[in-house]
Structures are given as structure tokens and as C-alpha cells.
Amino acid sequence: SLPVIGWPWTEASLVFKDRVADWESTMTGRIRASGAVPVGLTAASEFGGLKNVMPWFAAVMLLVSLSSIAVPGFNGFIGEFLVLLGAFQAPDNRICAILAATGVIFAACYMLWMFQRVIFGKVTNDKNKDLKDLSWREIAIFAPLILFIIWIGVYPSTFLDKTKASTENFLAMMEKAKSTQVSQSHVFKGEAQ
Image (cartoon, rainbow, N blue to C red; front, top):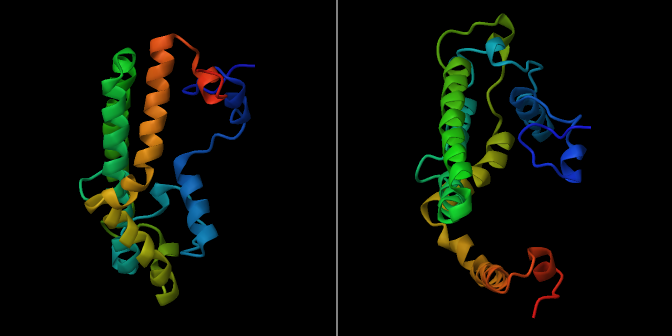
């Protein structure tokens, strides 16, 4: 069988061939699983004007969306910046890095478009007029998540310092493998000297 488009040709890619879900249904499932806003609708077109009905939910969604599109000051920026920085530093991956950077732009456009359709404007679906805003329990659940989203974005060294030694060790192993022309699989198994 063929691998999923976008996944490398490996046995691992076959695991996902029947499990690729669209973004909206996946996110709605996660929201339902967390106990927040079980509304029963899954498409962005079924929403509209939620800030009028659910202002706290709109605020949380705004912060999470800004993190997701990698706005500076949010954790998503740190992650995407480091990944793209590493991709552009690898000389063999320039085309992949350019495609990844382009994907970041397209993802941000989609996320902003979805946020505008779901949050702003008039309530377009009568089912949404009776939705309840986040409860204090749900706000208490989201508060630490928002704290970490901003903390990692503003002061990432708190978390990056904890991985510095293992990251430097990994980079040294990769350089050793590169200089001795040993395959990377031997380095991971500890067979390289």
C-alpha cells in the first residue's frame, strides 16, 4: 500500500493511513474530551459570533490561536522558530525548510480565517444562541495552560536549559557520525566508537 501523502515512506507511515482526520473534527473532539463546551457541531461554518455568546471562550480561543500561529511571545513561536532555524542550518534540507516556512504561513492564514468565522460577526446558527460560556471550573483548567503558553513564549530558557545537556550530546553524536561516516542507526545503538 502507499504511504500517507506528506509522511515519509516508512512502515510507521502505514499506521496513519486510515487515521487521518480533518482539523476541525479533531479539535472538537479534544474540546469535548476536556469537558469544555460540548456543543455537538464540528464545522467552522456551523459557528459564528461566539464572542457575543461566550466571551471567556473567545478569549481563551484567541490566546490558543495566537500560540498556534506562532505569534512572538507565545510558546508556538519558540517551537516553530527553533525547528525552522535548525532546518535552515542543515545544508541538505533547504527546500524542505522553505516548504515548512511556507506551510507555517498557510496554517496561520487558515487559523485566522477560522477564528474570524467562528468568533466574530452575528450568531449564524440558532443552536449557538443558548451556549453557556466557560464555567469557573473550565477557566481554572485553562488558566495554567494559558500561563504556560505565555511563560514558554516569554521566557523559554526555563524549559530549554533543562534539555541543553542532552541536546548538546545528541548534536555531538551526530557530528561524530558525520565525520566518521558511520550511519546514524549505529550511533543510536551505541555501536559507534
